[in-house]
Each structure stands twice: as structure tokens, then as C-alpha cells.
Length: 180
Figure 1 (cartoon, rainbow, N blue to C red):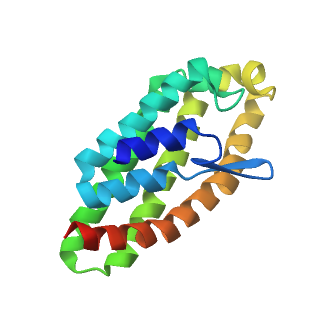
Figure 2 (figure 1 turned 135 degrees about the vertical axis):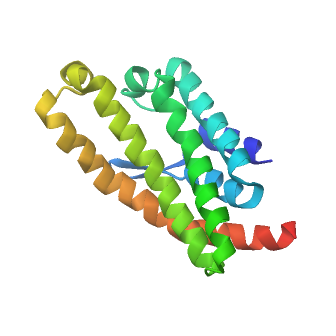
């Protein structure tokens, strides 16, 4: 079921990404994080991998932005961070739940961490792999690339992390009760 949700979120415009002015807020990590809480970190990593593979394929035939054709054709950027969203947020939740930490708080923190993993890793890997091509790809000088990427992290990334922190427990708590 989660794979179907991810397919819908990644292929139907406006469902996996919410446009807010010049920003495009990605909410797909919420799905991955909820799945990793309910199904475990291994399954979360697999679902994150599905999202990453779809992102990679879309970069070739239906890119989400003009920049996607340059950076998301690299599977290290398009697949690896998305797999780590599920793996790390699931491990974080399942390791700490043993310590009787408030379930909703732990879900919220897992949501924030998972979302930030995606944002930070994607932007960091873009910087590492494409800093020398920044003028050709982004039309900005190499020394302006880092501030540009930090600006994205501070806008999109922060909003995505806050939304994940809010919505992961709202979605996961009732599903956890149904699962039991």
C-alpha cells in the first residue's frame, strides 16, 4: 500500500509536492517516515529506495524541475538520501521507543530527522558533485552555490521538517492503533 501511495505522490503533480509561492514543499518523506515507524527501518529504507528510483527515472523522462535533469540523474543524489530517510528515521524511532519516551514526541522527532536527512544529504551531494558545474547548471558562480543551497535548506528544508514533525504523529498514531 505504501508503494502505491509513493507512486501517486511522485507521479501526480501537486500531491507529493505542495507549491507555496516560489517554493515546492516535498511531503513524500512523511510517507516514508510513517512507513518506517509502522513497518521498521528496513522496510522504510526499501520504500525510500522506491521513491529514489522513481525520482531517478523521472529525471530522464519527466523531470520535476529544470535542474533535475542535471542532478537527479545521479543515483547517489536521487536514491541514497531517500533510502536513508526510511532507514535512519526508523532506527531512531525503534531504538528510542524502548526507553519509554513519549510516542508522539518520538514520532515527531523521527519526522524532523527524516525530513532533514533528505534535505541536507541531497543539497550536500549536489554541492559535492556539481560545485564545479554550478555556473552551467544554476547560472551562479561557484562561490555563490553554497549560500544558494543553504537558502534552499533554510526555506524548503525548514518548512518540510516542521511539517513532518507535525504530520508524522498525526498519521502514524491512528495507523499504529489499527495495526495492533
